[in-house]
Image 1: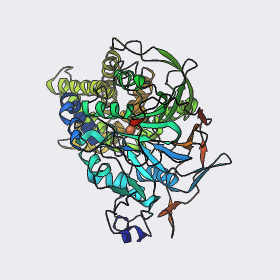
Image 2: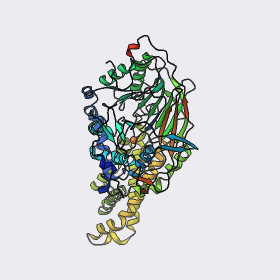
Image 3: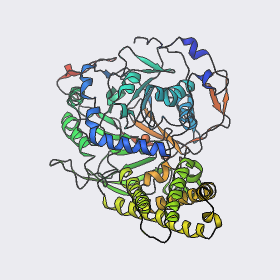
Image 4: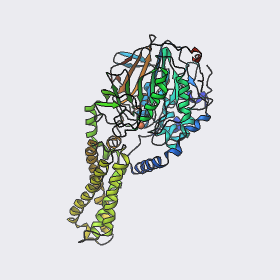
Amino acid sequence: MTLVPPREPSETLLRRPSSLDPAELGFTPRKPVAWLSPTQLAATGIRVAFAAQFGAYLDKRELQLALPTAVHAEHAQDEELWLDYIADLGDGFDATYSMAYLLAQDNVEVNDGVLPRGQVVVLGGDQVYPTASSAAYEDRFEGPYKAAFPQPITETSPHIFALPGNHDWYDGLTAFLRLFARRNGNHIGGWVTKQTRSYFALKLPHGWWLLAIDAQGDAYLDDPQLEFFRGVAATFERGDRIIIAIPQPSWMQTDSSPRIYDTIDYFLRSVIDPSGAEVAVMVSGDLHHYSRYASKDAPRQLINCGGGGAYTAATHQLDDEILVPPRYSMLRRASTQVRYTLQKTYPSKMRSQFLGSRVFGRLPWRNWGLGVLLGIVQTMLLLAFQNEEGRIITTPIFLMVSVIVAAGIFFSYGLTEGEQRMWPVVLGSLHGAAHVVLGIVGWLVWKQLPFHDLPWPLPVLSAVAFYLPFAGLAALLLVAAYLLVASRFRVNLNELFAGQGIEDFKSFLRMRIAPDGTLTIYAVGVDKISKKWVPQSAGSWFRPEKPLQPRLVDDPIVFAAPVRTPSEDDAAHMPSGLSTPTL
Ligand SMILES: [Fe+2]
């Protein structure tokens, strides 16, 4: 094994900070992204529109043909292997570092048991929020992970691999490839990068594999990627078992986006099935919770675990049963449909419902910028009503009402994914209309007060001073009520939780391939992250003031060892170490 030269002098890793001061850390700890702030909403809107119209131009996967390929087989001959999987991690420092801290410790103690640190870490996507750039990776991912695991690089350093999520994609993967796919190697704290493209294959002990597929949205897999995985599949032995990592849990998003599973189904049928290997488990991030589906008709399990640091997402509206592939797949030759049932969620459905209902308290607290914007809009509406007394329709009133209703529709239609488009339009229109009604009520109340009879410009100044704050708060509460109602129709369900920015209930997967070849997956959750950090003189730069309390949030999931029947063409077998498949 070749040693990877540190990208910076190792003294930098040894110089330990005594506080969270950016000058000492070498990066700036960030707050969680405020998804409903006016600037972020505008940026999200532009990004969604841009990705829809020009997404294909950002797709650099074809270009990776120029980059080398490799199957990573460094651990293929190990008797036992521990492997960690974490996704959706590059957000606020406290949550991201809490999870990085757990990954970095020698052991995690859960439910009276001890789980040793993974020798390999797989990052499942969204290593940065909201938009990829080298500076954003530094502050939101690389810095916290270095701080958690500032060990010098040695022969036994654990490896780190990353699959891009949609947020890694927003710069066309430029910063992602620079960070994770350097030809001459890189390291993130004490973790060593190995991959050379945005997708990768790990040959694991006892006939296990991990294939990470860069399948963005419902885009088709690019030819170089398919070629790579066909080359890998040619080296499988009959009976090998596979862990597949994909960026989105397309099995769960099939109702709203029935075509989204088509890409992965094509991959399974055309690449995996002919090889005689079997997919035991598919893992994914993207949705910020833990959920697991299993079937009595198939040995495969479907796990989403997006608890690496970003805001917690709802579980209470997950379907108890799903069909995979979905009923409305556009593929003419889809795989046989299997019914899966929901086995476990974290947070629990009941807890998720409770978290959703806290929106009235948390939304105004966390989104004062949106409150100011709504207050300004309400004040402008008031002035439009006030200036044209006696007339119901005037140009200013017409313009304000149109803008408010259009904004309501944009908020629901633009931010709700899927092919069901009627409910977003209906609920968005009603949401806009409700804000107009709020404006009328506000005007009727304001009329009773003496301010509008004052000489110019006092009516305007008094409206800004006294009306705007109350109108802004009332409008925010109206948004909270809308989110609660709309989420029942699966409209803006994401915003109901993104707007609250819940940092607790984080999770990751720790997997063990035992000497007997069985795979056990432990889902580790943390009900409460730390927000206070104490510098220390060894190990992670900071420890939580109160110890984190990780626990198993699901029963250990055990998969039988592969039963392998070697093919006649043993020449295709690869030796241990880095090897290149025949393409
Ligand atoms: Fe995410």
